[in-house]
Length: 330
Ligand SMILES: Nc1ncnc2c1ncn2[C@@H]1O[C@H](COP(=O)(O)OP(=O)(O)O)[C@@H](O)[C@H]1O
Ligand SMILES: [Mg+2]
Image 1 (tube, rainbow, N blue to C red):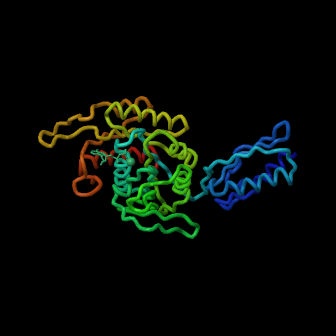
Image 2: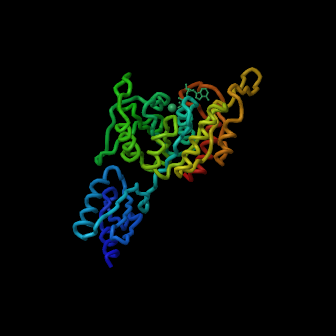
Image 3: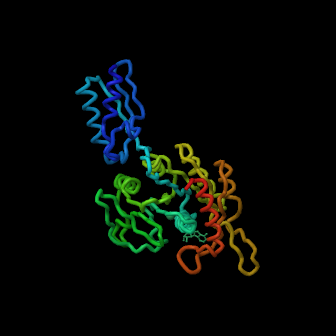
């Protein structure tokens, strides 16, 4: 009886992110009343970080003061509910473990290749200490504007929408923020951006390493998938394996591996020279139980800051983009 009343009252609580009752948005993850009468409740909320405190107070007040339960154990999770007719944003995080293997370069060129395939693409530059996407894409930095409900409108270049900490820093000053502030910044990148209507995919350029930001991604975009970038060299591939396994351990699906700087195509005789060794991509893919989606040769774009679909590298990126489209079902 009490249990049923409690469930009903909880179902009536409004999820402020959706402005709908929890019942409508599948907001109750768990509801158990233990033998001592303590209620154990898990709630899904849209924009959890923004609304958790207010909803928590509301629920505690209701359960303990109004309904007289002796105690409550209450946890919140980011909602996975998608209203009918709305397209969920699909996220793909690019991880490598090691820096300098070309993660940001791959992210930017993959975005361009996805656009060549007719997709709408955004990039979150989550490498908060070393943001490089704006530089790679030559995004002209200007103050961001926001929507009426205070969502940031990303800057865009060649049809790629971008959000980056670079946009919030005075030019040529190093970033002096501390961890907690950066964490807050990331939350806004995941929940507070107004991407173009119908955006098909948002790529997340992760910082090197396997740490905090990967966990943040799990918290804020639990369904994000992962693409692992490595070079053919064992030093890079060993760390890439760790990054990939770390992601799998916290429940992310790794969709494949990109091997970057795979070889140099000698223009004189068209022979592939394996400057950084061979086999790194394959090793990582085997260990993670996925495929190598492409091997990008060494080189710089000729006419622009990104590879065109006519260049060797651009063709590899087109291939990778097609695999990404299949794997992400976009
Ligand atoms: N396939 C490639 N051929 C030649 N240089 C590359 C290639 N991929 C990346 N680079 C260069 O390597 C450097 C590091 O790349 P970057 O994308 O910043 O790596 P990360 O984001 O992993 O730290 C950059 O100077 C970039 O231009
Ligand atoms: Mg980078």
